[in-house]
Amino acid sequence: MYIRLIYILMLLYSNMMYSQKNNCNITKGSKEIIKVNKEDVICLSRHTNKNGVLIYTFGIWCSPCVLHLPNALKLAQDYNLDLYVLLIDKEDDFKTINLTVNYLKKTREDINIAILKDESEKNRNRKYKRFLKKITPQQFENINGMSKYILINKKGDVIMVTNWKDNKKYDWRDDSFMLKEKIIPLLSPSNN
Image 1: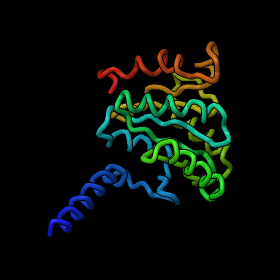
Image 2: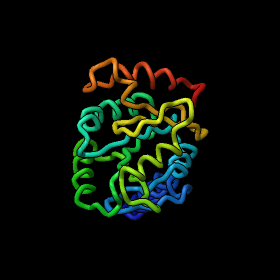
Image 3: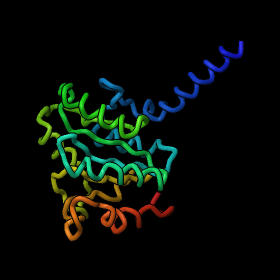
């Protein structure tokens, strides 16, 4: 009797945890990766029960992405943000996706992983450029680069999109100074 009750409660809890994604009609691909575009990312931010959403663009083949991942994880944890590590690979590039997911899950088992939808474009660079063009507000320079932080408040407003120039005056291997200068000041309650 108690075991059934515990099982039912666990099932209800897991449904509630995934319900915010269901509100956005987001589909899952292989390895429990959600498939997203700009509209999906905005929807996730409007349905988060945290202070906002942080998208961190990542490729296992990108050295800065790997180096800066611990800072992205820490930032999300310290400021109560929903973190989604965004892959730009083709949806059917299973070899790269598996390698990336395995790496990310070893780093943190409960990490949220998303992949850009292929939609009409399967070339990873072109679909990523299209996504950046759509998501980057005019006040930010739109540069096609990885290890990018996209900060979205609970209203669905994109309040920061970083690029490599934001870290130019510092050592490229450590983006913590850029985070202190560009991201952390935006995490006040008035921006959420």
